[in-house]
Image 1 (cartoon, rainbow, N blue to C red):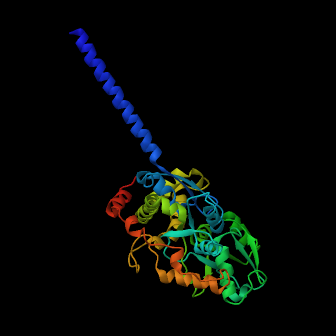
Image 2: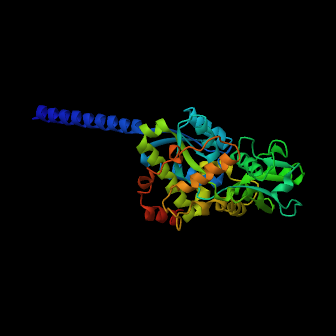
Image 3: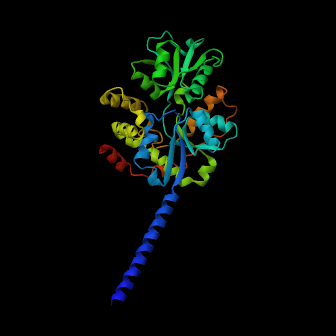
Length: 363
């Protein structure tokens, strides 16, 4: 009896050990099955305005639940980040169209797969009491930019060229960084204007500045931020591409629903982004102001195509036409060469009500 019991127990122990080993193997295989993604932001440090496509999907597990292991890296400038994707050293960047168009012109096989920000983000601006009243008044002046590789710089040069100025000869360009650095350049009159984007201006507004903005009819119709990947990666990893973009769509919906929660998530994910020299309620108020500068541009309600991430061919034609007219690109290929809406239906197959509920109840 004793020997039989011991034998039975041993058999069960072996079965248990086998089951444990099997679970360990399955767990290991599951972990290994996660697709590794190298993802470039286009600012030198993750800003709270980027929460929807960086900290929120990472912290809330939107990417992980899609089978992705995402490494989010800051990068200084959209054009440069796009070139890293071209080189195959990153799978995705959240870039702007001019970098993509120039790269495609040079033979790169890359593609825009998700239209993240549905309205233009770039303008040239002057402080409210500036004597500069129109773009033509910038001749002979100095324009501050975050970096010379910024997408805002490229668009600003194109804007000036469109009104007949030579952006390389008629104005000076001075890299001034973001936030306090740019504020100092404005206060000390090192620059007469700045060329930046929505949330960069909001950061300066938090420091007391008020601006007047300039754009042209052409730039008011430009596409802005989009998810860019390499054709080879897309072809081999369609499911991962859908999961990655879907995580961003969920992040956008979460941030739209509860901006304060998105800010706190971003601070937790990137502690250095939280100001420590001002009271927390002020820091939160100012961070929400920066995030709000971008949020409305994520909305899909009342759009011609009300799906997260959708492109309109006419938007691409207008954007390509603008950069062609100002000489940034030398030809106008069929726009379908470098963008696709083929993933959009699958990207939008998620429970939007569940994301909204999660955001509303988030503590």
